[in-house]
Structure formats: C-alpha cells, structure tokens
Length: 292
Image (cartoon, rainbow, N blue to C red; front, side):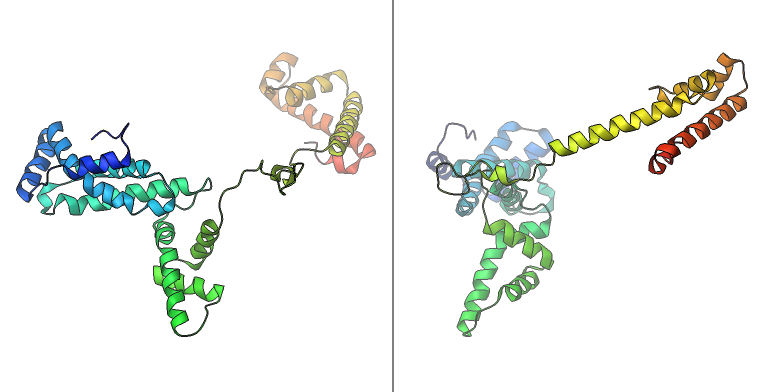
C-alpha cells in the first residue's frame, strides 16, 4: 500500500476497507510469497494487516511524532515481518507481525526524540517507553499510603521494577526531563542577549599562547642551528640525511655514497649527536634530552 500523498485519515479509511483474511487464506499467501516470491500475495497480505499497523502507530502519538511518519514506520515493520515470516511455525501472521511493527515504531520514536542519542540497548529502550508509566504508578501507590517518594528512592524502585541498572535510570531521567535547544538561542529575552554558543569554551589557541609558542619555536630553531654548526661538513650531511629529511635515508645508502661501512656511518652519527647534545646543554638542559 503506497503511503505517499495520503493523510492518516485517508490511510485509515482505506485500511478499514481491506479484506479480513481467514487462517487458511493467510497461510496460502504466506507460502506463495516465501516459496514463489509472489508479489501480489505479499501486497494482499500487507494490505490486509495495515489496519493493525495503523492501530499500533496511533498508540505512539503522545511522543509527538507526526502520525503519517508513525504509520510509515509501522508499514516498514509490517513488510519486514512479511519478509521474515515462516508459515511452517504454526502461528498467525498478525501475532508475529506485532513485534516487528512495534520495534520499527519504537526505533523511529527514539531516533527522533532528541538530537542526542536517547539510547540503543534493550534496557534503555524499555526505560524510554515504560519509565513514566512505572513512575506514575509508584507515585499513586505512595500517595495512597500517605507518603512521598524522594528522588533517589524513586529511581531505585524504577530500576528494580523495570529490571535495568540504576545508572540507566538516572541517564534516562535526564534525557526525558529536558528538550533540545538551539545554541543560537539567546540566554535572556533581551534583544541584545548573549547566545548560548558564546558561552562555550574556545578550545583554539589564544593570542598569548600563539605568541609564546612562536617565540619558543624560534628559540629552539636557533639552538639547533648553533648545535648543527658545531659539526664538520660530513657530520652535518649525515644528520641532515638521517633526521631532517621527510624520508630519512638508511645507514647503508649513506655508506655507499660516502664510501664507508654501515657501522662506520652509525658511529659518525652517534658522535655527531653527542656534539650537538653538548652544545644544547650549554643552552638548555631541558631541551638536550630530546636529541636522540
């Protein structure tokens, strides 16, 4: 049944006019779709049970989602049920489809409740759809006994009643108690009120930090140039090729170019680093230990 372009009232009227399938016809249609992929049988099966999908969708209107969207999600759940239904199990299609329809609607409601993910585990889903009902019942029972439940006691009882961890109850209470606000909304009703986004901490470097970092970088560069100038020409060449290139050369390739063994190049490199470390220690002992 195509849903585009129909209001929820129109879809409800069309669904109510659909045929009612007896058990034998339903079973024949299910076999035709499963074994022969008969699309006409699938369409007839889904059309017959759209009234069930619409009825279940209407129970979730209190969550604020448009009825058309709820029906769309319910129909998707119905189609998934039809695709996975096994007629050999001996259960009615409606009994099997209820679970898929409900799961599809619940997933949609939770996805659209808030920009922040409301929950994904089975316990969080159970809390989302049952927490307010359980809380209301506990409050009525407490009121009948002439007492009021404090917040921590209420959360503990909900945790035990629904069978979920206490921290999930605390998390869901925060999710359900507030709503999303734009960061561009003003903090007060004044025309020139500051926006909430202006209150967020700026993680980028500030001007003072930029100046300080730039000064430190320039100083370190000068120290390294001074240390490098203390080396002879061959040692400078080895250090540049080994440490200052984007793609450092190997000891073997340098040895081939200089006419030296790989071990000799390693010794010259170690000696060069020793000279540079000594030079840097004269400038700053904190920097010298970074030279490897």
